[in-house]
Length: 295
Image (cartoon, rainbow, N blue to C red):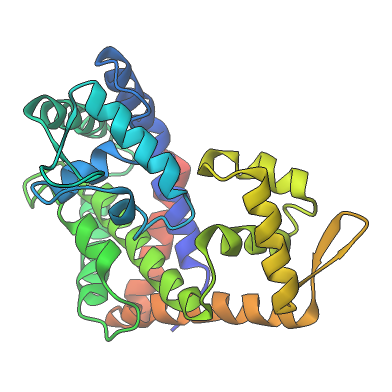
């Protein structure tokens, strides 16, 4: 069964959806004067009533520094969105105001998606059904990978009665989370820091070749220039990267390591897709392409 290449199409469809409702979420956040809400507010709502911390957020995104997350959580607490858990230094829970704010941001996305009709209703329902079957198959797939990311994503399921486009967005987001589960399971056995792995990936993809490149591309992650310099030194010590006159390139052993991780990610991720037969797989491909293009 040919599932190769399906995820990139699905991801493009999810991103196309996001371009419709993302601005509405940003507008709602701006109206509420939410500070740097992206990356912590909605995950905190998902975790509620469990506390949130930098360590908890880094389970799915180990590429962002704990320092940056701690700063954002502390800033949110100073504005009354979070409250420090008694007896801890950096664990928080949403306040009632924070919960209402998060729900309003999500509500803005739902309101926008409820107005979208990119395909005929019967085709949207068919797509939603196929995606939900995939999600359920991922949930019962053997480990690795684990299910940390997809299980958290499932907490935001709006239910069977939600508008079909909202359900499709949920299921695509669930699959994106499981893709994260698969990739984490593929590279974490190498015992390497997340920001070092991300830097290694950019070098492997040819999207960076110098320390300046990495700092420019990854500045949003909250790591210092010196920390990325140390990451490059670690990669050199491992024999995965070589340096010459300030230019960094992935060595043949490094290419083999990174390619193996990519193939392992695909193997973990696509294994559950065997729940669909050939005809259903082709239907999924066609509907995802049509959805992406219509959006």
